[in-house]
Length: 283
Image (cartoon, rainbow, N blue to C red):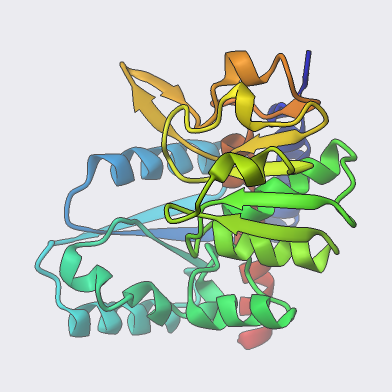
């Protein structure tokens, strides 16, 4: 039976450190503040925002909300970004996705003020990550690495297979593994014979959002399986991995829910506190 890599112990450890840091800042009259921007209506994005508000409330971090109409133009959104960038009371921005189609096509998240881009999706932060420089790192990608470190799973020299090539998870995660001297393969919807690659993975990460895409015949007995997928099936939240069957075969596995996701929100808070420090230097 596999070791279950629960996210709660790590998230609790991160929470304790974050609360200590927030308390120190408040004693200096600095109140860490995240601004959540929503363009148009999207139930999935709204649920995510509410979860962030709930977690950050527990961490004593202030969350502000600004909602704009779906018809908001590119020029209007850039003006909003500039206004927020000049507001020193706002330390981080979370731009809810998916965006309306006309804004998504223009990749407007790349115009986020990079020093307040706590999700690490602006092109400046992604470019710095690519170059190995200091940057805000996409939260889910960093959560995967921190979870593996927490359970003392070595990364150097390991054969890592990532399924998914998004700029928020797959691509930045590949760079993080490379920085730790792993050998990385990225698979995607056009990959031929997916199981050929997954069977050879010492660490397998699935981040495609397709329930049950990974079954027990696609993994090795000594593999560590990290499930980043979040799917709603008959009212239940499940991952990309057929947990019940894969758990019986592999060395270690993350559950969904209760694995990477719970850590991700704490990484967002951690990034926000880093943004507070940068803001102090800037002003």
